[in-house]
Image: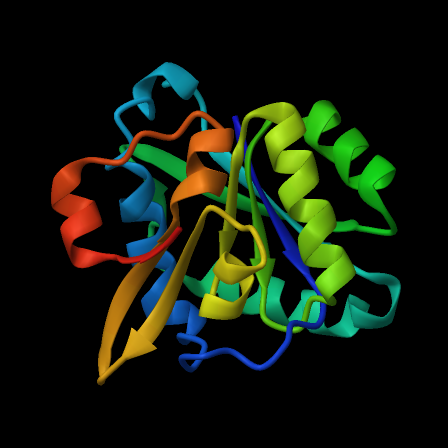
Length: 181
């Protein structure tokens, strides 16, 4: 299974975007609180496709450099691998999801509103997670984000978006998360 990451431009977040180095482990840990996580496949690595809108290729490449420096990233007990891809529209993103058997799409800060919508649509069509690093993206339809709140990282769960992709998060996570309904 793969985790697909997409980059582009987001509206100003309600909470500051969390730094990738600190947010990525929490974002991946949050997925393990989905009661259906194990059913999404338990063999092989999560491969994160870092997809960039055409004007954000340099941003994607810098993000890939940062991601590759993260020590031993895991989703559950599965190792995570990062791969860059170009993202032009829903069709190209869907093709990447199909080609790489993606398990999630991560939209990082900088993605356009249209890009966030495409990530959300493709994730729902394929029943895979949609992830972000600021609250605005959760408000725009991504299932899970991580934000910095009062000096601490906090998960943000868009309940309808999570349900739309078949995620059922544990109550213990939902009590700690900011919920978008």
